[in-house]
Length: 415
Ligand code: HEM
Image (tube, rainbow, N blue to C red; front, side, top):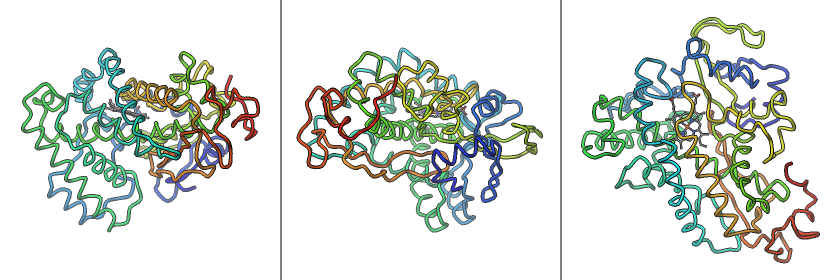
């Protein structure tokens, strides 16, 4: 199985036939059943997070030396920190992401979405660059109080960093990726040293600069790339399922749809832990020191927990039990913000384009990294028209007898 490009069928056979499976290529132990993954995440004594940010493709020694010369390091801070310093650092970041602060971002997220949607001209547009790419970064910087940032540079730094640590780059490609990763780290270190105000950098003033830079490096990547990925996955998922799009005006439906997308198509599709002692998981003996790859995407489609897991069902009672944001001590600090962004963007897009549909039937190109999987483009027809079709009724393709969804013979959306 290709760990960088696997799909639902691979996850199904892993769960059924080899729920704890050692991958020869990487030495990682793949754990794919919901109950195993949840139990591991809930047990920080026996399963440590130390390998969360370790490069899956070992970085070549010359590239490592150039990163070290640039002062680059990722000491234990948040996701990769199983030590006593985790709780204090987590509290410090959580203060920027309180439920009230996140809820206060709603009008701004809607405004950012509306501005971008207003700029779309048809008949075909790609919602990735037009809507999903930079909106989460702008929102994150504002919620953390960070001003004067070149958002395009931040996106370039963070996509390079994701590939360097979670991709499968050749040594030459690693050299190319290490430059923007080091530039990002240097920029962060400079901003942290110069910090005076009440932004995130200022809040880290009592944390050693090396730790503060490592924390910000992770947070400014994880806090926006993942949401960009969620937005892209969400548009594809909703537009592919019957008349689901036409139901987005119903109260609560965008929020429930977002939860279902997180369950079935989580952008962070795997996450890692290290076994601190010999353990038995689903009857398989795993040695101390084993690096585990928790197949989060596999857990959301586990039929033991979620009936008819392939369908997005907005009325599913237990959607929120998914593990897309992890579980326990390291549970994602940005879950509330990501959920809000996705629901607001979905609702705003529906209101602007009530008859949207995908422009292509073919699968989109996918981001294929060890822990991040999402469509890289979202090409849509803004007029809702299929090839050779008249413009559908603005009440929504699914409501029109013989309209788009019905004509294509696709199933009605969830319960
Ligand atoms: C759809 C978007 C997102 C997904 C799928 C996601 C997923 C995850 C996952 C799987 C973890 C590891 C949890 C564990 O080990 O149990 C995590 C941790 C984390 N996430 Fe997110 N995340 C998203 C968005 C965000 C955002 C928007 C922020 C910040 C505003 C954020 C900040 C963090 C932080 C700080 C941690 C580490 C927490 C800790 O170790 O204490 N994430 N996230």
